[in-house]
Length: 89
Image (cartoon, rainbow, N blue to C red; front, top):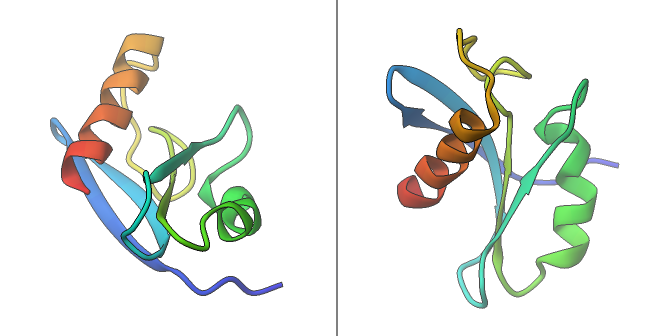
């Protein structure tokens, strides 16, 4: 299944974070993040189903998908990336 979406890049310090964006502004936006060995593409169908009346963003976490590689993969660093994406959007 092909899910229509746009791609973009947000910055977290010097790190480029890739994301996929779909839906439209409206209700509370959704941000989808993946676990280990996955990436943003895996969330597109769920995002499409859960966001018909809102905007959704699927993030490639640092070191995954098209996002940049980093030296710090701690939970606080990754949480900061999510905050930076939310500020960017």
